[in-house]
Length: 122
Image 1 (cartoon, rainbow, N blue to C red):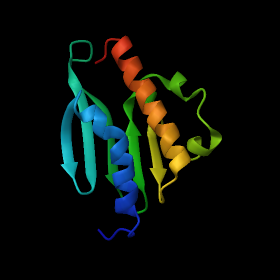
Image 2: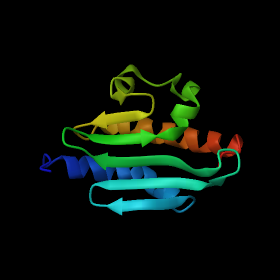
Image 3: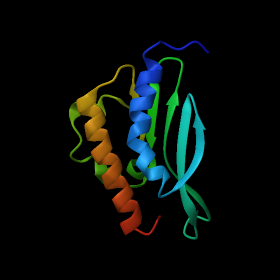
Image 4: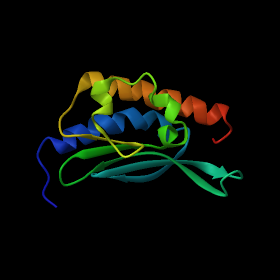
């Protein structure tokens, strides 16, 4: 798959949001085009819980964040600009580095992690 030259830079910037969580959770995939983190086994869900991932796709770089799928109220204060990047219920797509949106996504990821812990998912 041929990707645009800026996609690896976007990937690394988004991966940087997730890297601190890999120390607390389980790093499942770490390749040049895919990075994925899971939580531990959950008795409640009877499986390991997917937390987040970044992937380089053909037309964009995707950032998946499971906490917003389980807790859609996390999106209540999300900016319209970040919501425009959403595809589905828990995925954001980017083609370029957008620092303000990445900062907002970093805060959203932290709130999601905190809520996962508070709710006993992690």
